[in-house]
Length: 108
Image (cartoon, rainbow, N blue to C red):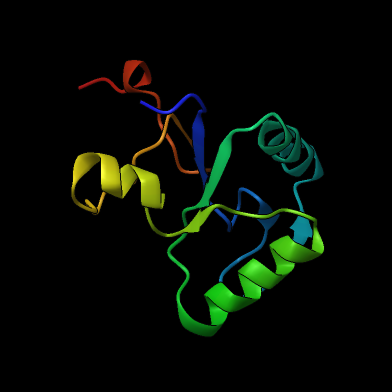
C-alpha cells in the first residue's frame, strides 16, 4: 500500500461555487487545504461528472487557482498497477463532495 493518502474531490459546488456548465468563485478554504495536503506528499484526484470542454474549463480553472491533480476522473497509475485493473470506482482514502452523506446519518 502507498505511503501517502489520496483525496478525490468534486468540482461543481465543492471546489467551485458554480452551476454546471458555468464556472464560479473558488472555495478558497478547501483549495488552500488541498494545496497543503499535496505539499505534504499526498495525492489528489479531480472526480467530476464534467467531460469534454466543460472538463477542460474546470481543469484550467483549477490551474488558475494553483491546484494541480495527480489524476482526473481516473485512478492513479500506481493504483491500477497495484490492483492489476482500473475499476470504475476511484480508489482513495477520502471523497470530498457537496452531495456526500455519511452512512451513519442515513436512516430507513
